[in-house]
Length: 134
Image (tube, rainbow, N blue to C red; front, side, top):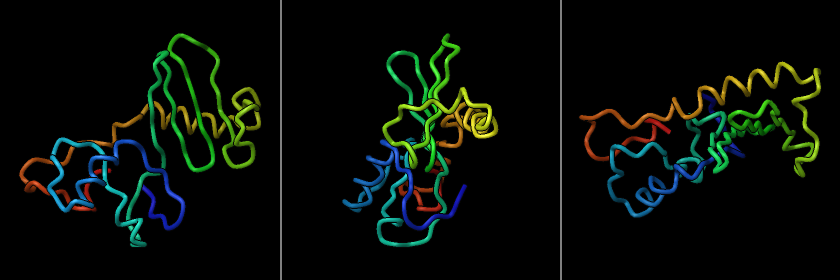
């Protein structure tokens, strides 16, 4: 986890908890997302270092602040792009040996996927704290 102030990655999993926070209603305990409202309010808080996604064509993606890594089931071609330096996503860094360490890091993040996004533990009441799961 990282403690960030400024630009952060927020996934679609944050939609329900954010709406609940804004409406000041309880967030269901089985929701995996976490409201970014404390970040929006300018509070320093622990937050995710990456966001994961799955695509319709059996593809999987992990997005970090600087890079995006994409892999498809059964396809040996991987994609790693520099989202800051080349946001058009036309240069595949996965085939460049100079980016091998970054590629391995993103492969590991994707393998972990959303495993760190667990539902809040039962018995904590109906409202999750902002220090809970993302």
